[in-house]
Image (tube, rainbow, N blue to C red; front, side, top):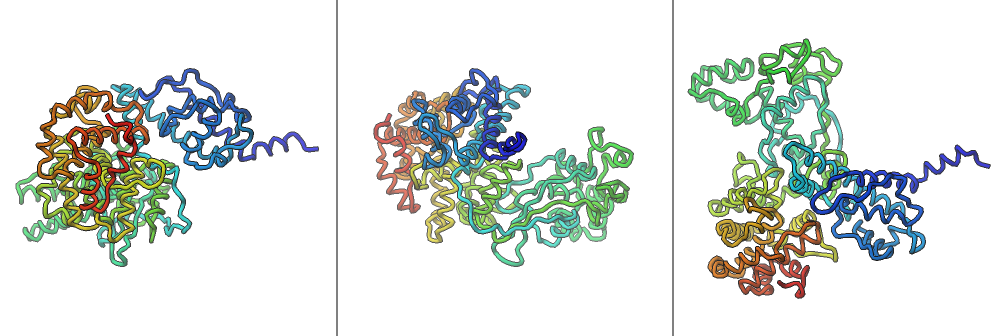
Length: 637
């Protein structure tokens, strides 16, 4: 007869038992919050993990209680146990209910696979619940602002529930570099700090100072992620993640390639002033020499512009301790010979940044990685805390595709120092007309951080030209990825043609310019649900898309056609049919955009079939049929 402790060990090691316990704790945590986003009410009565009973059907009520926090694409069916299980299976990404539950129909039990999928969703929900609560409880926080941030956090996460893992091993290696190895790599041109898909330098001086202070204190840095380009030998590695950190380090020690180039040019035009030597050995003297030669004092903003060195913080919030306090407020050239202790090693500051100290930075280098493999890895990083959003992942994966780069440039999210012809040469010829998109998108004031403009522009283009495949409605991120993957896979795709890209961005630019220039068409309550001081993304996408489709059919007179019906536009935008849905999940987003777009086409009398034919003639594809099919004929307003 087995001993009691042996039986307990067997139970504890049963993966079903462990998964049930994990999910129970997560669901109980979700029930504890006394505040909730505006999309749903707080859980009426919190419950403990012991009350989530997976041995009966009691767990069903507990999942239903917290489904608002789980943010499924549509509400769970509560009419019967069978319908609930069927809807849960679909929302978790399963086609076969048997993959999710087992046991009798009246008292179903979640399978191990079903528990794992629910746990993954619940873990994400708990983490993003904390995002909501922190925003709501912050100074000046409101339920509405916290809800917006909560929704954005969900949307920023990659929807990987339907991802299929690639069977081919990822070709990558992990290593550690000393800081001087990054410095030498940048000096030799083997490190591309500004890939075309990256934003400009978004860190302020304060963030850079804190990073350098962390290194001087011996605090480890996160991994730097490098990607080996597919172009072959001789091309530099691209910095996928870690650009801000490396830029800060190179600037601090006076080794940023752009700064070196600027100083070298100044030295050539003003020989005999030893500008190069002063820059490398005595930066304060260099600053005085520069002012004397050019009449231009080197301020912090100029240091930022030229990638020149910056000094450490001077106040008590910075470095502390006998060895570190004397470094406050100094430039690197002033402290490089100072002795400190890093990684239990007595070294000079110069040893840390340019020598062979034991301070090491982890790196991950990807070789020959496919788009799907990089996608998988980035999703893993997100779960482990890196939190790259969908646009950051997409720009890294599809950066060799000019469509991706043209969207980035036209949206205004590319590095402004990189010439248009180096990033999106197809747009250069007509940039004077297309470039207005950057300012217009910013003026909508829905936000510019973390590629927000790129997301909105990608969303519009994917919905305009992406032909939906499969039965399920894809998330916004998946829909955009599907379009880019299609273009990536087909060398003959029309959206690889420079002329087609110019035509596409002329169409979008004309539509956005008209849309933004005629505020009388759009009721204030439609723009943001209130005073109309700024646009929300969903309403913007739906209305711009409608205008773009009209412009595709009537390119010569779409403006006059819309203005003739301005009263009808305004009335429709005030109507209940155009009111933003309370729950902006995948299905409701598709339905809303479809409803607004269909209404615009009906107001101006544009035939959807004619619109689809026009788009296919010009760009090789159309998303109009798939979009309008979401609401169908019965949903016309």
